[in-house]
Image (cartoon, rainbow, N blue to C red; front, side, top):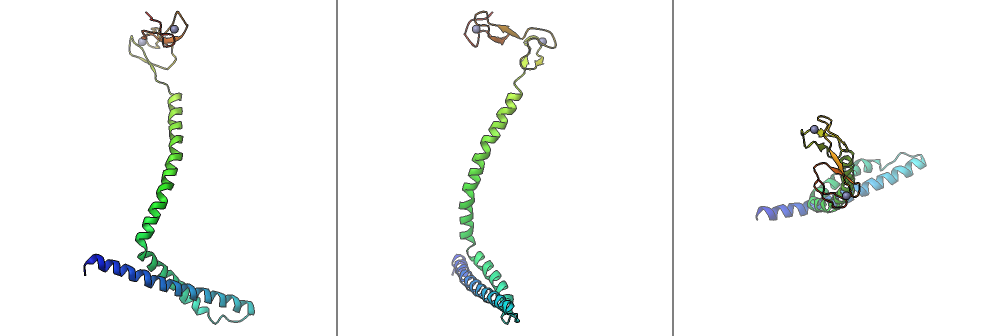
Length: 161
Ligand SMILES: [Zn+2]
Ligand SMILES: [Zn+2]
């Protein structure tokens, strides 16, 4: 018998034993619990209280054995179940991140580089803060403000000198 077959057989045994122990444990727990409740209600000593003491660990051990036997199934199930959740989370988070990135970009527009001295001037600057060169020019046709290095108006397409 090779290892795989042995492993599968062991797992099968684990599942069966685990389930039996789990069921017995649960039955004992339930019986003990019911007896405990009835006895308390009647004001008697719960005679089957020991069932609870036996049943709870049995259910625990049985549950653990069953879980070990069904580990592959549980893992597969968990993987299948959690993957869409992660995707949904990713899909709902991604637009938020893009929005934040876009907002950050909008709040910090690219600086205007002076064509004369290379100084980085804040966006919207009309003159270079270092050398005083005019950084923008007005289109004579439409009045659009364009960078001083632009050859054509970005609004109407007029050639600028
Ligand atoms: Zn400059
Ligand atoms: Zn223009």
